[in-house]
Length: 196
Image (cartoon, rainbow, N blue to C red; front, side, top):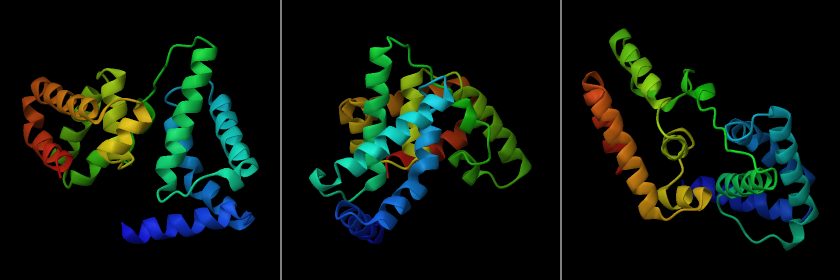
């Protein structure tokens, strides 16, 4: 973790000084994650790409005025979420989140716990239940378990208090537990992970 932070500090500082290769590295490292997250809030995937492009153009133009950053991914997610929120408010659009796009893939963190066919079947049932969670709960779970953000970082990205994030995650997992006794042991693993 410290190594990642040191790398982020070094690459960010190089970028702020005008290093185009550092800027390209930031783009390459985080574009896919930003796109995956952004498309959950916007129906038009081209618009998501445009928002991300605008974010990176703005970063380059204002690089000399940007403050120091020790977690680039967090900074970019926070910036992207604010940009999308602003666009949606301008267009008076209703947030439309399509979390199915990552939930049904083997990239979901839940699959890390799945070792045999029985576990995989339970995981598929969990995914089906996750799809029915309220969008705020699903966003919190996505940021925590899929993107590995901390509670304070999730609070900043979602623009809510840390207590709200903890309550949202707790309520989500409680709801999941109530919806499937078969998944009880799986949810216990997730709860242990949540409070680490």
